[in-house]
Length: 307
Image 1 (cartoon, rainbow, N blue to C red):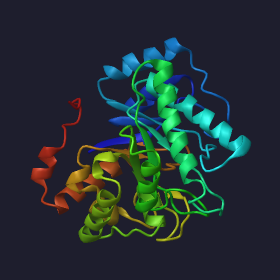
Image 2: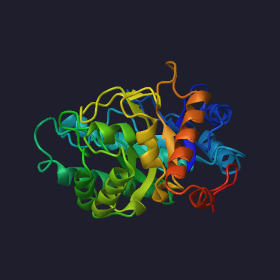
Image 3: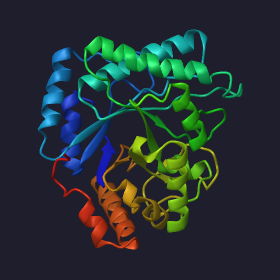
Protein backbone atom coordinates (compact mmCIF):
# COMPACT_ATOMS: atom_id res chain seq x y z
CA UNK A 1 0.00 0.00 0.00
CA UNK A 2 1.23 3.48 -0.86
CA UNK A 3 1.21 5.97 2.01
CA UNK A 4 0.37 9.54 1.12
CA UNK A 5 -0.63 12.83 2.70
CA UNK A 6 -2.60 15.94 1.94
CA UNK A 7 -0.06 18.75 1.61
CA UNK A 8 -0.20 22.46 0.96
CA UNK A 9 0.68 23.90 -2.45
CA UNK A 10 1.38 27.30 -0.91
CA UNK A 11 4.31 28.87 -2.70
CA UNK A 12 3.51 27.17 -6.00
CA UNK A 13 2.43 23.74 -7.18
CA UNK A 14 5.98 22.40 -7.26
CA UNK A 15 6.28 23.06 -3.54
CA UNK A 16 3.70 20.33 -2.90
CA UNK A 17 6.03 17.70 -4.33
CA UNK A 18 8.85 19.05 -2.18
CA UNK A 19 6.68 18.81 0.93
CA UNK A 20 5.72 15.26 0.04
CA UNK A 21 9.36 14.31 -0.39
CA UNK A 22 10.24 15.79 3.01
CA UNK A 23 7.42 13.80 4.62
CA UNK A 24 8.68 10.61 2.99
CA UNK A 25 5.35 9.75 1.36
CA UNK A 26 4.64 7.86 -1.85
CA UNK A 27 1.70 10.04 -2.91
CA UNK A 28 0.25 13.47 -2.18
CA UNK A 29 -3.13 15.16 -2.34
CA UNK A 30 -3.50 18.88 -3.03
CA UNK A 31 -6.13 21.52 -3.64
CA UNK A 32 -5.77 23.22 -7.02
CA UNK A 33 -7.57 26.27 -5.61
CA UNK A 34 -8.65 27.58 -2.22
CA UNK A 35 -10.95 24.92 -0.70
CA UNK A 36 -13.37 27.54 0.64
CA UNK A 37 -13.51 30.07 -2.21
CA UNK A 38 -15.22 30.05 -5.59
CA UNK A 39 -12.21 31.62 -7.28
CA UNK A 40 -11.03 29.45 -10.20
CA UNK A 41 -7.64 27.76 -10.29
CA UNK A 42 -5.29 30.40 -11.70
CA UNK A 43 -2.18 28.40 -12.58
CA UNK A 44 -0.78 29.20 -16.06
CA UNK A 45 -0.75 26.35 -18.54
CA UNK A 46 3.04 26.17 -18.47
CA UNK A 47 3.03 25.73 -14.67
CA UNK A 48 0.53 22.87 -14.93
CA UNK A 49 2.60 21.22 -17.67
CA UNK A 50 5.81 21.63 -15.66
CA UNK A 51 4.20 19.99 -12.63
CA UNK A 52 3.00 17.10 -14.76
CA UNK A 53 6.50 16.55 -16.18
CA UNK A 54 8.13 16.70 -12.75
CA UNK A 55 5.57 14.35 -11.21
CA UNK A 56 6.04 11.81 -14.00
CA UNK A 57 9.72 11.37 -13.14
CA UNK A 58 9.75 12.15 -9.42
CA UNK A 59 11.97 9.68 -7.55
CA UNK A 60 9.76 9.24 -4.49
CA UNK A 61 6.33 10.87 -4.84
CA UNK A 62 4.71 8.58 -7.37
CA UNK A 63 1.20 9.97 -7.61
CA UNK A 64 -0.76 13.17 -7.10
CA UNK A 65 -4.44 13.33 -6.23
CA UNK A 66 -6.48 16.52 -6.08
CA UNK A 67 -9.39 17.44 -3.84
CA UNK A 68 -12.18 19.63 -5.18
CA UNK A 69 -13.21 22.71 -3.24
CA UNK A 70 -15.62 22.12 -0.36
CA UNK A 71 -18.10 24.71 -1.64
CA UNK A 72 -19.30 22.47 -4.47
CA UNK A 73 -22.84 21.18 -3.93
CA UNK A 74 -24.17 19.26 -6.90
CA UNK A 75 -27.44 18.65 -5.05
CA UNK A 76 -28.28 22.36 -5.21
CA UNK A 77 -30.07 24.21 -7.96
CA UNK A 78 -30.15 27.91 -8.81
CA UNK A 79 -27.01 30.01 -8.49
CA UNK A 80 -25.22 27.62 -6.10
CA UNK A 81 -25.87 24.71 -8.44
CA UNK A 82 -24.56 26.63 -11.45
CA UNK A 83 -21.46 27.75 -9.56
CA UNK A 84 -20.88 24.21 -8.33
CA UNK A 85 -21.03 22.68 -11.79
CA UNK A 86 -18.74 25.34 -13.24
CA UNK A 87 -16.29 24.99 -10.33
CA UNK A 88 -16.21 21.21 -10.70
CA UNK A 89 -15.25 21.51 -14.36
CA UNK A 90 -12.49 23.99 -13.52
CA UNK A 91 -11.12 21.76 -10.76
CA UNK A 92 -11.24 18.71 -13.03
CA UNK A 93 -9.49 20.56 -15.86
CA UNK A 94 -6.64 21.58 -13.53
CA UNK A 95 -6.35 18.08 -12.06
CA UNK A 96 -6.23 16.53 -15.52
CA UNK A 97 -3.65 19.04 -16.72
CA UNK A 98 -1.20 18.13 -13.94
CA UNK A 99 -1.66 14.41 -14.55
CA UNK A 100 -3.49 13.72 -11.27
CA UNK A 101 -4.65 10.17 -10.63
CA UNK A 102 -8.03 11.42 -9.46
CA UNK A 103 -10.06 14.39 -8.27
CA UNK A 104 -11.80 13.62 -4.95
CA UNK A 105 -15.24 15.19 -4.58
CA UNK A 106 -17.68 15.78 -1.72
CA UNK A 107 -20.90 15.60 -3.73
CA UNK A 108 -22.84 17.96 -1.46
CA UNK A 109 -26.03 18.04 0.58
CA UNK A 110 -29.70 17.91 -0.34
CA UNK A 111 -30.35 19.94 2.85
CA UNK A 112 -33.20 17.74 3.98
CA UNK A 113 -35.07 17.66 0.67
CA UNK A 114 -34.18 14.02 0.07
CA UNK A 115 -31.88 12.34 -2.44
CA UNK A 116 -34.58 11.33 -4.92
CA UNK A 117 -35.28 14.88 -6.04
CA UNK A 118 -31.67 15.76 -6.82
CA UNK A 119 -30.26 12.43 -8.01
CA UNK A 120 -30.81 13.00 -11.73
CA UNK A 121 -29.28 16.47 -11.54
CA UNK A 122 -26.18 15.16 -9.76
CA UNK A 123 -25.73 12.44 -12.35
CA UNK A 124 -26.04 14.96 -15.18
CA UNK A 125 -23.52 17.29 -13.50
CA UNK A 126 -20.97 14.48 -13.15
CA UNK A 127 -21.32 13.48 -16.81
CA UNK A 128 -21.13 17.08 -17.98
CA UNK A 129 -17.94 17.72 -15.99
CA UNK A 130 -16.19 14.72 -17.51
CA UNK A 131 -17.30 15.58 -21.04
CA UNK A 132 -16.45 19.29 -20.72
CA UNK A 133 -12.97 18.48 -19.41
CA UNK A 134 -12.15 16.14 -22.25
CA UNK A 135 -13.48 18.62 -24.75
CA UNK A 136 -11.31 21.38 -23.33
CA UNK A 137 -8.03 19.46 -23.06
CA UNK A 138 -8.36 16.96 -25.88
CA UNK A 139 -7.44 14.06 -23.60
CA UNK A 140 -9.32 11.84 -21.13
CA UNK A 141 -10.35 13.52 -17.90
CA UNK A 142 -8.64 12.19 -14.81
CA UNK A 143 -10.95 9.99 -12.71
CA UNK A 144 -13.57 11.79 -10.65
CA UNK A 145 -13.71 10.10 -7.24
CA UNK A 146 -16.83 10.35 -5.11
CA UNK A 147 -16.02 10.35 -1.38
CA UNK A 148 -18.20 8.58 1.16
CA UNK A 149 -19.73 11.04 3.62
CA UNK A 150 -19.84 10.90 7.42
CA UNK A 151 -23.61 11.32 7.31
CA UNK A 152 -24.06 14.83 8.67
CA UNK A 153 -27.47 16.32 7.86
CA UNK A 154 -28.47 15.80 4.25
CA UNK A 155 -25.03 14.91 2.91
CA UNK A 156 -25.07 12.80 -0.23
CA UNK A 157 -23.02 9.61 -0.41
CA UNK A 158 -23.41 8.61 3.23
CA UNK A 159 -23.70 4.90 2.39
CA UNK A 160 -22.37 2.52 -0.24
CA UNK A 161 -25.90 2.26 -1.60
CA UNK A 162 -26.07 6.03 -2.10
CA UNK A 163 -22.71 5.99 -3.88
CA UNK A 164 -24.07 3.27 -6.15
CA UNK A 165 -27.14 5.38 -6.92
CA UNK A 166 -24.91 8.31 -7.87
CA UNK A 167 -22.85 6.16 -10.23
CA UNK A 168 -26.03 4.78 -11.78
CA UNK A 169 -27.43 8.30 -12.22
CA UNK A 170 -24.25 9.22 -14.07
CA UNK A 171 -24.78 6.31 -16.44
CA UNK A 172 -22.15 4.07 -14.83
CA UNK A 173 -19.41 6.13 -16.47
CA UNK A 174 -16.10 4.28 -16.11
CA UNK A 175 -14.30 7.55 -15.45
CA UNK A 176 -16.06 7.71 -12.08
CA UNK A 177 -14.58 6.07 -9.01
CA UNK A 178 -14.71 6.16 -5.24
CA UNK A 179 -12.51 7.43 -2.42
CA UNK A 180 -13.08 5.66 0.92
CA UNK A 181 -12.52 7.81 4.02
CA UNK A 182 -11.92 5.77 7.19
CA UNK A 183 -13.24 8.46 9.56
CA UNK A 184 -16.37 8.97 7.49
CA UNK A 185 -16.90 5.21 7.32
CA UNK A 186 -16.65 4.92 11.12
CA UNK A 187 -18.80 7.99 11.79
CA UNK A 188 -21.49 6.76 9.38
CA UNK A 189 -21.88 3.59 11.43
CA UNK A 190 -20.01 0.96 9.39
CA UNK A 191 -17.98 -1.28 11.75
CA UNK A 192 -14.51 -2.58 10.82
CA UNK A 193 -12.95 -3.31 14.23
CA UNK A 194 -12.30 -6.99 13.49
CA UNK A 195 -11.05 -8.75 10.39
CA UNK A 196 -14.53 -10.20 9.91
CA UNK A 197 -16.15 -6.76 10.13
CA UNK A 198 -13.57 -5.22 7.79
CA UNK A 199 -14.10 -8.03 5.29
CA UNK A 200 -17.86 -7.50 5.48
CA UNK A 201 -17.48 -3.75 4.95
CA UNK A 202 -15.39 -4.23 1.82
CA UNK A 203 -17.68 -6.98 0.57
CA UNK A 204 -20.60 -4.56 0.92
CA UNK A 205 -18.65 -1.91 -1.00
CA UNK A 206 -17.85 -4.44 -3.69
CA UNK A 207 -21.49 -5.52 -3.97
CA UNK A 208 -22.80 -1.96 -4.20
CA UNK A 209 -20.11 -0.17 -6.19
CA UNK A 210 -17.40 -2.64 -7.20
CA UNK A 211 -13.92 -2.64 -5.70
CA UNK A 212 -12.52 -1.92 -9.14
CA UNK A 213 -13.86 1.63 -8.70
CA UNK A 214 -12.01 2.17 -5.40
CA UNK A 215 -9.06 4.38 -6.33
CA UNK A 216 -7.74 5.66 -2.99
CA UNK A 217 -8.38 5.95 0.72
CA UNK A 218 -8.38 8.89 3.09
CA UNK A 219 -6.65 7.57 6.20
CA UNK A 220 -7.89 9.25 9.38
CA UNK A 221 -8.77 8.53 12.99
CA UNK A 222 -11.92 10.10 14.45
CA UNK A 223 -12.56 12.76 17.08
CA UNK A 224 -16.16 11.54 17.41
CA UNK A 225 -17.58 8.15 18.43
CA UNK A 226 -18.83 5.39 16.18
CA UNK A 227 -22.01 6.35 14.33
CA UNK A 228 -21.81 10.03 15.35
CA UNK A 229 -22.42 11.20 11.75
CA UNK A 230 -19.92 14.03 12.06
CA UNK A 231 -16.83 14.75 9.96
CA UNK A 232 -14.04 15.24 12.55
CA UNK A 233 -10.58 13.90 11.75
CA UNK A 234 -7.93 12.97 14.33
CA UNK A 235 -4.33 11.76 14.22
CA UNK A 236 -3.95 7.99 13.86
CA UNK A 237 -4.09 6.24 17.22
CA UNK A 238 -5.30 9.36 19.05
CA UNK A 239 -8.99 9.06 18.28
CA UNK A 240 -12.03 6.85 18.67
CA UNK A 241 -11.09 4.40 15.91
CA UNK A 242 -7.63 3.42 17.13
CA UNK A 243 -4.74 1.67 15.45
CA UNK A 244 -6.05 -1.88 15.83
CA UNK A 245 -9.33 -1.14 14.06
CA UNK A 246 -7.53 0.68 11.25
CA UNK A 247 -5.15 -2.28 10.89
CA UNK A 248 -8.08 -4.68 10.50
CA UNK A 249 -9.18 -2.72 7.43
CA UNK A 250 -5.86 -1.68 5.93
CA UNK A 251 -4.41 -5.18 5.88
CA UNK A 252 -7.10 -6.37 3.46
CA UNK A 253 -5.45 -7.68 0.26
CA UNK A 254 -7.89 -5.76 -1.97
CA UNK A 255 -6.31 -2.53 -0.69
CA UNK A 256 -2.69 -3.60 -1.11
CA UNK A 257 -1.90 -1.41 -4.12
CA UNK A 258 -4.03 1.61 -3.28
CA UNK A 259 -2.78 4.95 -1.93
CA UNK A 260 -3.84 5.74 1.64
CA UNK A 261 -3.77 9.53 1.95
CA UNK A 262 -3.46 11.05 5.42
CA UNK A 263 -5.79 13.97 6.14
CA UNK A 264 -4.91 14.25 9.82
CA UNK A 265 -4.41 17.51 11.76
CA UNK A 266 -0.88 16.73 12.93
CA UNK A 267 0.07 19.49 15.35
CA UNK A 268 -2.15 21.94 13.48
CA UNK A 269 -0.60 22.13 10.03
CA UNK A 270 -1.47 18.74 8.62
CA UNK A 271 0.37 15.42 8.43
CA UNK A 272 3.85 15.17 9.96
CA UNK A 273 6.72 12.72 9.47
CA UNK A 274 5.63 10.92 12.65
CA UNK A 275 2.09 10.54 11.28
CA UNK A 276 3.49 8.88 8.17
CA UNK A 277 5.48 6.50 10.38
CA UNK A 278 2.33 5.58 12.33
CA UNK A 279 0.47 4.95 9.06
CA UNK A 280 3.18 2.59 7.83
CA UNK A 281 3.14 0.73 11.16
CA UNK A 282 -0.66 0.40 11.15
CA UNK A 283 -0.60 -0.96 7.61
CA UNK A 284 2.22 -3.40 8.40
CA UNK A 285 0.35 -4.67 11.46
CA UNK A 286 -2.77 -5.16 9.38
CA UNK A 287 -0.84 -7.16 6.82
CA UNK A 288 0.71 -9.28 9.57
CA UNK A 289 -2.74 -9.98 11.03
CA UNK A 290 -3.79 -11.51 7.70
CA UNK A 291 -0.83 -13.77 7.08
CA UNK A 292 2.03 -11.35 6.69
CA UNK A 293 4.72 -12.18 4.23
CA UNK A 294 2.62 -13.20 1.23
CA UNK A 295 0.68 -9.94 1.35
CA UNK A 296 3.83 -7.90 1.92
CA UNK A 297 5.30 -9.41 -1.25
CA UNK A 298 2.18 -8.45 -3.20
CA UNK A 299 2.67 -4.75 -2.49
CA UNK A 300 5.04 -2.66 -4.62
CA UNK A 301 8.41 -1.96 -3.06
CA UNK A 302 8.85 1.50 -1.68
CA UNK A 303 10.55 3.64 -4.31
CA UNK A 304 9.35 1.50 -7.22
CA UNK A 305 7.01 3.04 -9.77
CA UNK A 306 3.76 1.16 -10.36
CA UNK A 307 3.41 -0.41 -13.76
